[in-house]
Length: 281
Image: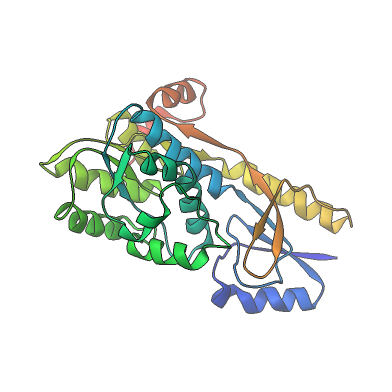
C-alpha cells in the first residue's frame, strides 16, 4: 500500500495526479485543504474551517452583546477555495440569527439578505454560497481586501462597526482601511492563523482576535494517518466532508481563539515569543 499526501485545493492543478494515484490503488490524503469535485480523495486532515468561522462569528456577537443595528461588514477568502466556503458557512451559522434579531445590519453583501435566520449548507446551498462569496471575495489577499473595503465605505454606514475578516492578512489590511476612515468610531475585527504581525496588531488594539492553528499538530496527525494506512489499518477520523463528489472521512485538529488577554497568557507560557511579535512586519 502507498500513500499520496497532497496540499492543493485546486482540482484543475491536482486532479489528474490524484486520479492517477487512485487508479494505482494509492490512498490519497488531502493535507489542510480538501480538493472538491473529485471522488479520488480518500481522507482529509485539516483544521475545521467551519468551527473556525463559527468562532469568528460568535466573537463578534459577544463583543456587541446587547447592541442593536451594528453595521456588519462581511469579507470572505477565495471563492475558488472550499475552505473559504466552510469558513463563511460556519460564521453565518451564528451570525444569521443575530442579523435576523436586529443585532447586526449587513452593509456590503445584499446577496445574503434573504438568508437571515437560516444556515447555509455547503452542499445544499453551494450555488448560493458561491454567489455570496464572489461579492465579498478577497482571494485571501490584503490588497484585494483593502480595495473592496474602500469601495464599501463610500456607500455604507459607519460608526461602531463589526468586520468579519477571513484571515490575518486580510484583517490587517481591512483594519488599516477602517481605522483611517473618519466616520468609523471603532471596530471589532476577526482573523485566523496567529501570524506574528497580527499578534502585534492585537497588542496595539488594531485587530481584535485571531485563531491559532498548530501546524505541527496538523503534520503529526497527517503522519499518523499515513502510518496507519501503510500498516493496513483504518486511520482515526472524527469528521466527514462532502466535496461534491463523495463524503470524505477527515481528522480535524483543534484550534484556539486568541484575543489580547489570551495572547498575554500564551506569551507567558512560551507559546509565542514577544521578540518575534515585536520584530514582525
